[in-house]
Amino acid sequence: MKENPSEILDLTKKPIGEEVITVKDLCKTFNVKEKSALTIRQRILGMLRGEKATIKTVKALQNVNFSIQRGEFIGIIGRNGSGKSTLLHLLIGAMRPDKGSLIKTKGKVLRLAQGMNFEPKLTARDNIYLSGSILGLTFKKIASIFDDIIQFAELEGFVNVPVKTFSSGMLSKLKFAIAVHAEADILLMDEFFVGVGDLNFKNKSEQVFKERLVNGRTIIHVSHSLTSIMKFCDRVLLLDRGIPLAIGPPEEIVVKYQRLMED
Image 1 (cartoon, rainbow, N blue to C red):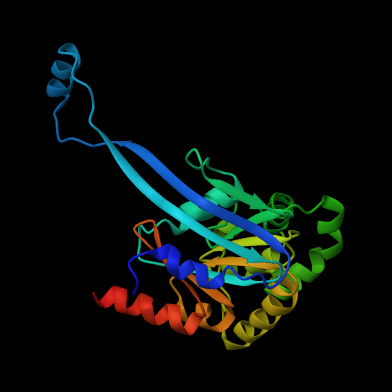
Image 2 (cartoon, rainbow, N blue to C red):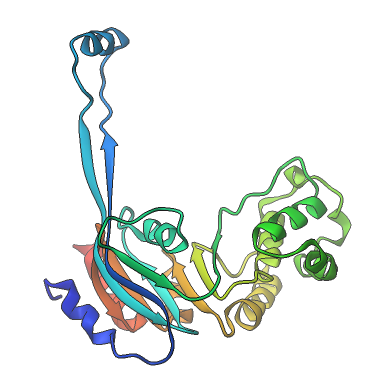
């Protein structure tokens, strides 16, 4: 593997369509107070003496450069702590990058995560309206697709039941059924999964995933599932400790990642 990540990234700069995401010289630094094992007495004495907490600088992302064309399905992989989720937060505007960084996006950007939360005390009906509105759907639109969501999730007998009584499988199916109706041009998927429930539902969800969620949209998919990365992605970006190591075809980048894990 080349030592200079930018040399590898240059291989994919040739445009193949309309550019909808542009990232140049992207850096993100966090200043974190280091935890100490001091007792309360020691902390008070330290305050009286004017001692200051130790600040640790963490470079979450360093000089990340890439561009994505409309309709591409891009995967992001790397070990834990590589900056994958931080990158998604920056793309959606939930965080500010370091000075000198550039992020440009065209179209509505939406983040889907496996941890999309429901309100436990609310019913399936109420959670559909709540989650749907967060995903950019109007109440009128939600009403028009409500029956489709319930039928797809196979929860016809549980519409007015609090979701706190649902099994994990029922919750996963309901989350997926709502998410496939998301309205956005660019979807950022953080460990968002396809194939929950039994075999029949897995096959059904994968087909709907391709037809409704992926078709015609630009996708950035962060995942530890190399199976889904290989199956769906056009290109893959490999990050390690915030540094971009390579971007390219899934079959090549996954091999590099596996070698990295072995090392």
